[in-house]
Length: 249
Length: 57
Image 1 (cartoon, rainbow over the protein chains, first blue to last red):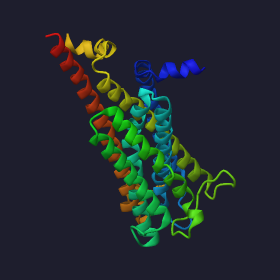
Image 2 (spheres, one colour):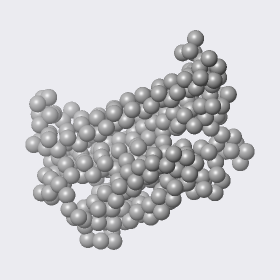
Image 3 (cartoon, one colour):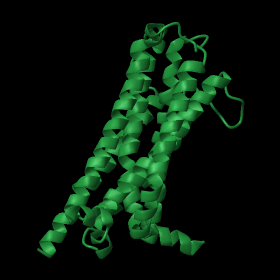
Image 4 (tube, each protein chain N blue to C red):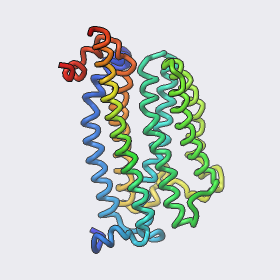
């Protein structure tokens, strides 16, 4: 088993694996999105208090979850990278960062569009909103730092530190609505009690969350292949790739 | 189906701007991300080809 993990941790083998996986993941993400939007917009009823306005939840909650999950995944790969010094770890962390930044931004954007009609304001300096904004800045900081350092391995190590240290912010975001008095409401879904939502609303949200999970896996598989080619462009195996040789002839 | 008509759907009970502003931004950013990832991959492949013709002209 251990052997197998290290086998796929080699950029060359992972390139092939990710290349076979991403089209299936992309198709699955599309199907889940269609299903999620159908349940969310065609089947789920209006909310008793918020009318149709609550439907922002179908992107807001999944995007917010993904923004946190992706940061934790970056921290995970960074720990692996610093301990085992595997080449793939830094590339995975970098492949994850843009998608995480987009989801963090979407969380803030859709939150503002939800806050305006329901709270009467686009923004408050509340613990939940502020810590999510910090998460967005951590993503931007990671991207700026790693792209500013020319030596890729050094850039990976510097980025790994931001990813690991910044991960402390993720539980702060998650528990902020419990620890402080926030304008933001508490968790809509929790493992310890039954969800405070109608069944169809919940299903729409879970389908959209799953869609964004699978989308993330697809785009990361796609993007990590680009990084692998860029970094290994001098190697024989990259030069012998059919997608390289094919277009040349 | 919960909607009387398409205009009823787009109106979203008066929350159209907020709901479609959220959905629209999500769609735009994800499409831009996919397009960008695709272009970056093509650039990387072009880089490898340039490398090859430089090494064995």
